[in-house]
Image 1 (cartoon, helix red, strand yellow):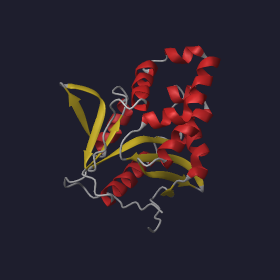
Image 2 (cartoon, helix red, strand yellow):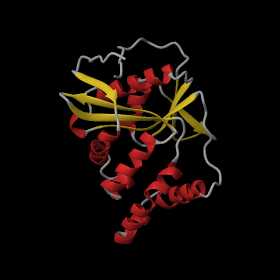
Image 3 (cartoon, helix red, strand yellow):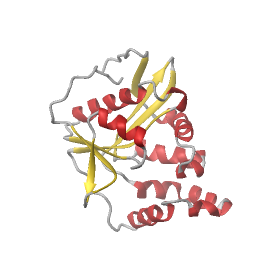
Image 4 (cartoon, helix red, strand yellow):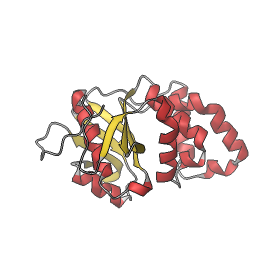
Amino acid sequence: MAQQHDASGSACRRLNTADIAQVASIHSAAFPGGTLTAFGGRCLEQFYAWHMEGKHAIAAIGLERGGALIGYCILLRRNDFGGFLRRAFLTIAGRLLQSPSLALRSGFVPRLRGGLSLVAGRGGATSQPDVIRILAIAVHPSFQGQGFGPVLLRAATAIAREQGAASLALSVHPKNERALRAYARDGWERVLVDGVFAGSMRKSLRKSAVKMPAISVL
């Protein structure tokens, strides 16, 4: 596909394994209080390597400005946290030995328990051919609030449509109002479970929508 620039001078391109360290660095800067960030750069690199190289991966989109990577978006057929645990087990165990308090972080134990169940072959999400999932989307803090997030979302939407998906899915912290407003402007809707919003969102790709500037990914 031909590469196109939007008005801000940014450009989207496909990421590869050579970009993993930069992706991990942006993650750390964008989510300084996150659990994965607390586990360190090596763990982050293994996380993104798995989700960019695994069979469940669809595309990793990078956003550049002036030749520097400033954001990214990772698209999956399904989440595979169990595969990441298998790959990063020694790294995670080593960090827990060094800093046992990491195990006390909110949500860590339930997620680890669920991941270990997947490793053991018990349960797990099945692939939905008509749904593509955004695992992660981030813009470096130095460039946030300048319209770069929507550029990544439009690129993700274009790829999902090329793949024949009916919808996109993602999870966001239910109290992250800034992100929720941005997703709403992009056509995302909250998914309620028993009348409660826990962070899951969907964007239909089959509805008529207001035309947005086209973004191509090299």
